Image (cartoon, rainbow, N blue to C red; front, side, top):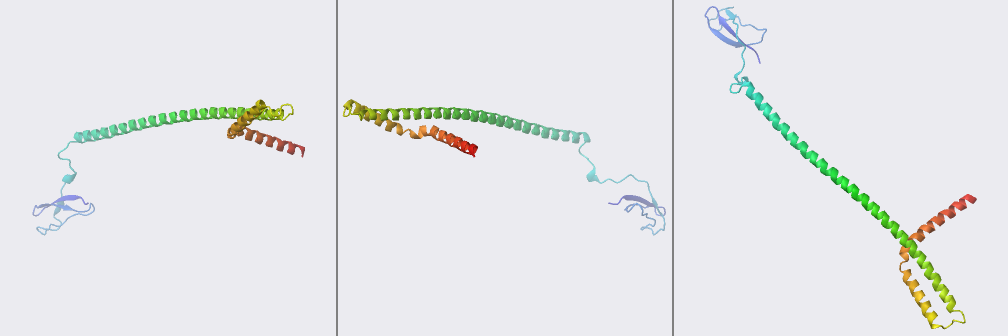
Length: 195
């Protein structure tokens, strides 16, 4: 936008405002036709009315901006509080979950240890009953006790009990499989050591 300058004709004394570049000047009067009769007048700078703040004072504008910034700040504080609450809830949930999982792990480990102990004991019981049944059968087959009904019932009872324990084979085989693996590993180590 070009600046505005005021000029007055020395011959006809008409004043007019003209927009032009700083480097330009108006010398001839268009009204009276005078040559080099236009004089540049000292004037105040021209400011358009739309840039002037007519209705509001600067203090009021400052107050409005301060209030707007306060509202934004309060909103940000509220969001930060909500985020902190969420972080606390998530941290507490995570802590409870970790404690619960550790408890489950400890319980499962103890239960497995007890199951292995029971399995080992059942395996020993199976061996004892099997040995007892074989012993009773051997005694029953002796000539002096052959046909004895008491021994026959004892033998049948031992065989029945042994068969009943066989139904729990899946439990006591847990420790037998582990023992077989350990025995197999030891045999491999001995074989490697002799070579």
